[in-house]
Image 1: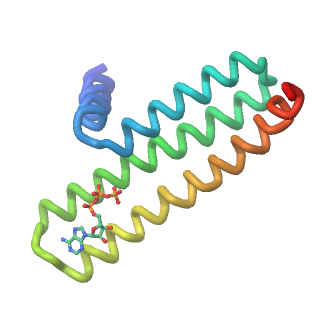
Image 2: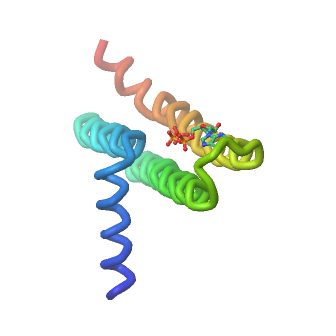
Length: 114
Ligand SMILES: Nc1ncnc2c1ncn2[C@@H]1O[C@H](COP(=O)(O)OP(=O)(O)OP(=O)(O)O)[C@@H](O)[C@H]1O
């Protein structure tokens, strides 16, 4: 149970200090509200929850990598730049695919409204 408490502590730290993570949590809440409002299927929920978990957890890992780099050095370092850019690239790819999945799932429901 102690590991669980440490994990909650890490999530609180992310919410307190990481703006990108806060934005992603707000988007996730909006997606959940839309999911309930449109009455999406169990299969659609599964895909949305999976991709959301992927984006949020990759953002956390990206922040951990950034903090590790800063612990090593906060001076300009070409290798740190590459490590941080690659890590940010992973978040970008999942976020991009998450947007595509969101459009694929919600577009038919939005179209039916008009
Ligand atoms: N020590 C460093 N040396 C060289 N480049 C750095 C260094 N620190 C940061 N950078 C560059 O700045 C970018 C942003 O890094 P930073 O640690 O500020 O992350 P951030 O502000 O949380 O941004 P994000 O999470 O949106 O990528 C990195 O992707 C990298 O290109």
